[in-house]
Image (cartoon, rainbow, N blue to C red; front, side, top):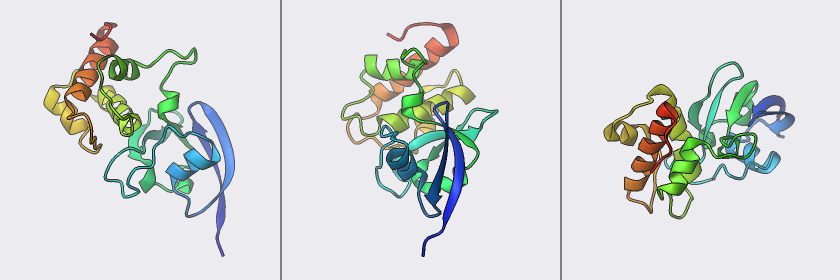
Length: 169
């Protein structure tokens, strides 16, 4: 016998009211029930960070969480931002998305959504991080392809753009 719960969440600016099984992980809810497939299922153990999203109250910015370690019922009443929600309403890329693209901060792309959302969280708290602070801020996200150099460059460039209105180079 499974128990269910009704939840209300705002995901990427849209409100959803759904019934979920109490054991449903947030990552599965986002992908399977509302179609946010940019949230990647990686290790299902919270080690890789591929499933990272921003989660918070509707009246304050979200913090990065690994959605494979959060139950959907725990997100009831929360505001969630996925990688799809980073772009502007007109489709313009967020500074972090643009920098990852332009500075080759991705290769296979598997870790990229989680890296980007962790970077957004980092830059909100620390708008001018050093390379060591960037590495520390992204330490919960694993990349098996890039060697991290271009990821760090991309985060540094996005930080500059967000601070100064500069375009990453």
